[in-house]
Image (cartoon, rainbow, N blue to C red; front, side, top):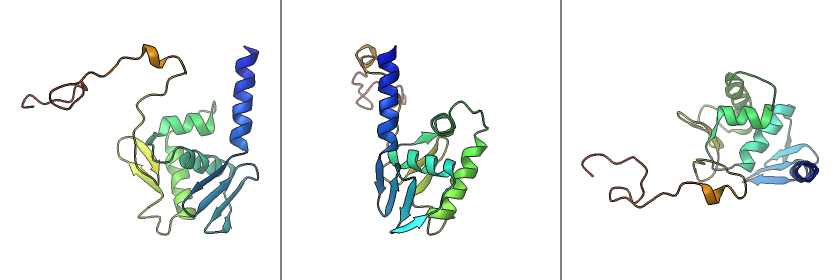
Length: 152
């Protein structure tokens, strides 16, 4: 158990020393500093954590529940909290917050940051992937996803 806790602590420490980059946006986690086009950007602590999560997960569609878990942890808030913080972030990092280019809404899912959009279906601990069900080829879509119509 101690080994697992040490790995988690080491992983968190490494995350705190990350420098994240997305285009002209730079996040220095160790210095708790954000720069946009080279100019410093003032963010509240939760805005900083939320933006870091978006840039770290660039291109992934992240649900509001997942963002609450990753950024707010055990504190229980309504998912509306995410919408409010995303709006505040857009006001600070978007050229036109009404037409966002960096923090995108993914309808029915949540949000995604700038980058090629991918959807994460599941995250499994190491070793669990061997026991996960495999997709089999299907004549309609190439994979047995259950998304075939009767005409395919």
